[in-house]
Figure 1 (tube, rainbow, N blue to C red):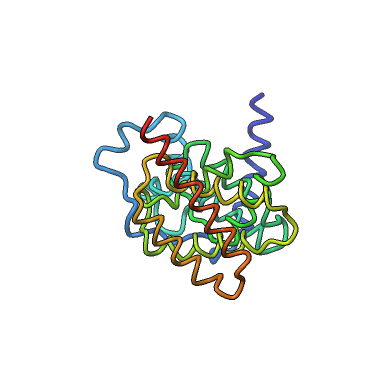
Figure 2: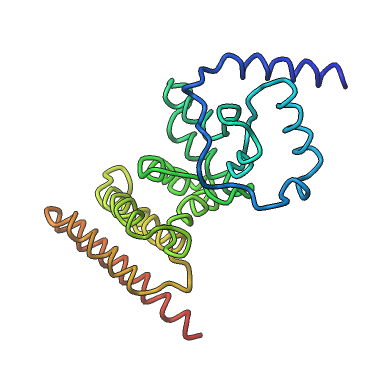
Length: 232
């Protein structure tokens, strides 16, 4: 067993050393660990950090907040590897969306996403592969968990794209938009945010009156269902 572990470690070291440093994220100025964090780290994590210091190797992190314990330039994140794989055409964007969703479900507090990744994630819901993964990615756009002025344009582009997709039928489109609203706003939504989103989507779909009418109807139905459920 120890030989297998050592072989695996050797391969990991070789891969890490093969990375160019412009592919490794710089140390962030925020995301520092709280005081006395080292005392509450699990033993495996503490040993990993100590080993990285001894061997002067970059560390693969799942939680970027741990970077506060590691010297600048000596760590990279799982998301970095995914970005590199996507850039080098080793991983299609649909796979990227699925992996990021699984990372979110695994417990990572925040994973940065773009509207392209979120739109690609819609395949997971449309093909009925994994609705929880889809919801996990979009839940990060919740006004309670994000900077709403920054998130609003991203969410607007996603709903606009869903509205004009030609390869899905009307039922799939309605389910997709409703699932997105549920993931973002949940049951305890604030109507102000939904209204701002509806106005932004309406502006984007002015030249597509049929899609505009259908999308606004879907939003209204979703809102009425939430209002009814909140009264129960």
